[in-house]
Length: 484
Image 1 (tube, rainbow, N blue to C red):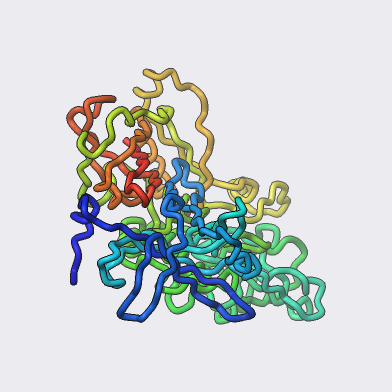
Image 2 (cartoon, rainbow, N blue to C red):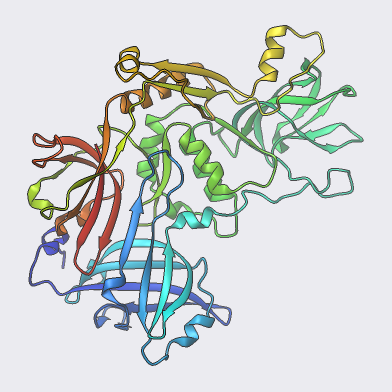
């Protein structure tokens, strides 16, 4: 029987129930624990859910950041343990195991329940003698691992060095000398698009390419610093955009618990890729965090990594108007006297965007290359600045903008990104916070909304974007944060 979830949210006769399916490892075997806030039997699968979950504990916090820094969803599931019968759960292995939480009605089939969280368990502990607490995080937690720990090995002086990774296109990187006897160098751990113009102290030299293995061999003995530009990782086609590179990384690099295609919101990522085709590049030659690398890529176009409630990776931007059909929020959706301005963001009249990162800064080259080239090699970034003179004058904003480091490659893309940010922040922006009624449970991060309320200039309705949600699933009340 199909159910109308939207209507059910406001049905006063509903018998609401939360189902929790959490995995732990017991004596080497991953075991799923089926629990709930009310007694429930999945008759189709002949499965009993134990009513040991505190309904008041199912409060999950989702948030986008204003500055594109990483922001994870998190929460806590409280389990009744009145007589200590579940003390043994504390000895099981819960860390980094999956957890799924569903909302529905005790009269529904299991298949009609709606996923409200799909993520990862951080661990389990006990905050009182009567309860256990399962601490949950979204799946971004799985990216908190080194992107690579693959070392060169062998017996050369660089045997303990990490083999580099290169994605997109990178300017003036320092390759790893993988075989001193043959002058073989490595720029990536697998096939690449191309090694471009190898230089010694800025002077081009000859090479023999081995792009199938991410390597090259010099044809002359180098007497100085070897650098080159690289068009990197090419598993089949060469990935150059933020979305394509991030998808490649999360599915193929990092820890043992990599993402699979089922962890990706393919439709959303495809739409993002089409809307954000700017080429980027990143070179990794030391131990770095996978999530940090992905965030550097995403923030280069003003985006951030977010996991949907279904546990699917998305790339979202803070933007107005936000994409999609706006969800109408009016006075009837907001509890009286709960709406407020939680933050007013500073107006900005200018943005400086750094681009075309120089991965090997060489400040004192004495070779006979042009002075303009020496200047490029001595600087970490090229940069562009965009400004609105009227806003700068009106707000008396005379200070030089703080540069924003990006992995963008071209001046035109950097100007466009600067203008996008300028258009967003050259007018006053606010974060509006309020307590929403059950209908607003269907909101999600990044959702476009039209917010109408007889306060704060919202009388005629204003475009907004949902950037924060904290839903109490026992009452279906939501703490909502909207960027306007």
